[in-house]
Image (cartoon, rainbow, N blue to C red; front, side):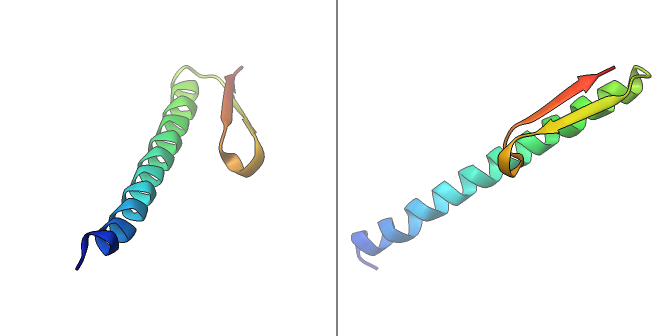
Length: 60
């Protein structure tokens, strides 16, 4: 494999890996916030932006 083909393979792989890690971390922090509300005997209100990229959790 020549260097140009390696770059065409490695760069998208790195980008998709990064996006996967970011998505997993975002979802995990969202779940932890909801769990924290329940542990403190509060109700979690969830607001989502477009494509669920930005979540807001309000404990009441």
